[in-house]
Image (cartoon, rainbow, N blue to C red; front, side, top):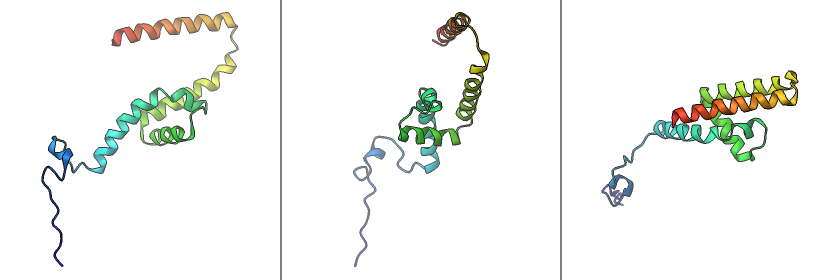
Length: 114
């Protein structure tokens, strides 16, 4: 029986036909996904730490935390800060003043980056 010949032309690989390399390695895909997950993770860190993410998103972010030193460090820093907050016991008006100053500083930083 004659072995079937695989067509390797543009019709066989429509992605290659538009200029995307078809033989992308697994490590390249991991690198691409890591960057994508990094951006995805940042907007969900608070919910992750508070245990408010749906199970599937929680698993995805946990897996990202394992491979991304930057996110892992940020998560640990946020957890430490959250553990310290109850011990501060600031009067409500002081807490509000701190929150307003922090918000002003964040807005200024965002304007710098824009």
